[in-house]
Length: 360
Image (cartoon, rainbow, N blue to C red):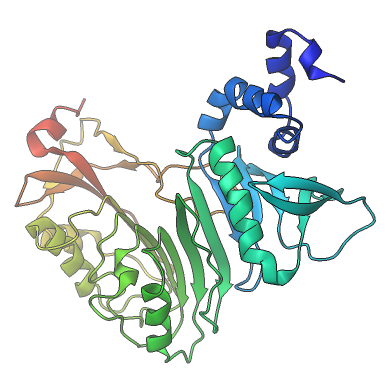
């Protein structure tokens, strides 16, 4: 079928119903075809949240996909280094000739290359994406299941944010090696951290604390100061049990005083065993109360990074609370919602006076 023989309206409709990988491959037919795809699919491309380079292991090249409505659409599989039964086709990608094959199972293009050329092949494809999807597109490079070897493969790609999921063993003690991971790269957009029994400390100036968003899963609360020097925007902490809530209360009071956490937008804390003492915490942080007959505004924000592989929930959990605190330095309000096992803390971009006007 020759798309060019149809009127523009029909061309646009045909392209609208094609998968991203098909559009990507079709764009190599000619300069005019690439131009047509870019112009006719501009709004569609703008709706893409990120393009994800997803590595399931520190040594694996990425699988490139686009999260889409609770699922994902794959584009390129860089993990393939073995030729399959399908024919090889070559594409000139940003001046580099790359071998591809079609993956019948995943319905994506597989890049075939010598492992020594891994970085240059990925860079060439990324440079093509920058032009194809546009320079304002967000790109994420995510490495999962980082356990002992913190020597990650992360190429320097323009407009790309780094994300990693780290799992520490119970007897983990090599904090110097973990600190070296964070110091070796630009600030991470998102860090997932699973810790069990370790009692090692992050350095106060650790680049871990500079991550925009962190997700911490603790089997027991024995991983000290995990948020004490946090400079990011969003944090989620899950704990098996918490013997002493004083450090959490201190965290909230340091925000309230304006001493720390100026960029914080959202905190979610969940206790797996036991209950969170609501009255104690609200009293110790000096919470204010909205009349129970009134409807409080709902605090909700886009997630800095959606750590679920292909989630259709891009926003934080709504906080509908009748309790709030006010920051001393700028009168900024944060909603505080405490339930049986959870604490939700959402910072508004509003003063107390403006916030109270939102109440119905």
